[in-house]
Image (cartoon, rainbow, N blue to C red; front, side, top):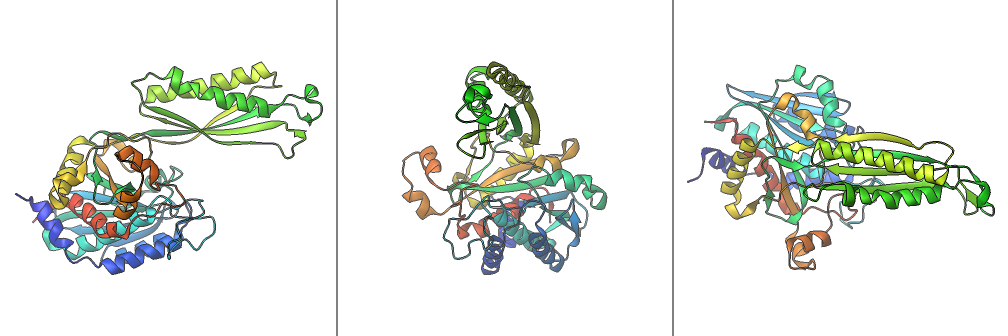
Length: 413
């Protein structure tokens, strides 16, 4: 027996303008914009929302855009898509590859905007099938963890009604046609840390007259690998990645300082606090052992919160996705180590559901080496890869996931 939400979603998305949406996606992909510079992308989304009848406001939190559609009594549902691209040189070879050197939609946010625009159109055109209020949000700066909080701080919920439920989704590698739902914890917290190691510069021929921060930084990078393996319990999930190390200008010059940037991924606040403390302690110890002239600078930078789905909301959305796409298409992948700032749009414990949409073309997936899911996932291009290329066959299903999700909350008539 199909639920009213599933029936309505199938009806409202039966005639999606797929060629138009694919053209919209290709255009967004050709013109990526970095965090808080998404002027063109926000303008394109805002134009579509206005044409569909939404009360639209631009420039929220810098470059955010939101549209409101009031449709009688009922709950307020927020649908969100992030809009920013990454400083990645594209290597997909697609005919609609990025036209901006050094920038690429390597995380699928262009597809998210396309899905959101399609869902907003479909729900507006089919407003006879539901009642309530729809708030559609194009969010900037997800990649830096700043955008959602900036929109809230800039009065998103003073300008628009506070939602009763928030919904969002993300493109991920995996065979197109699968949808990942995890009630409860689905994404980890992320914390960036910058370290400056202070040495004493000198000539490469006389290291005894200097204090080499490069050697100290190298020991520090190696020792930091023990934080997870020796200071975090085996039952806890955590990752520490050193993503940058910089020092020096020439081969025969011992520099005066070295810089290290690292990222922590954690799934509980106590583990996060313990890892931050361990990084500071290890940095101080290595610098003391090397005789550095002063203690290192350890600065905790950008962070992302835990993403914890409201279990009941996520189960309802997962159930309707199972009806719309087939029960075998919905799976629970468990918590991932990736991070999101979407929870900042849900202050004071507002319930939300966040899920994954697999977007790898079946030909690419089938050709990938390995027989097991983890092996193939490691072999196909994933998020932030210069070869990440979601399959166009996921345009219409991604619209349908948002529409059906919204209709699990809105009052279906």
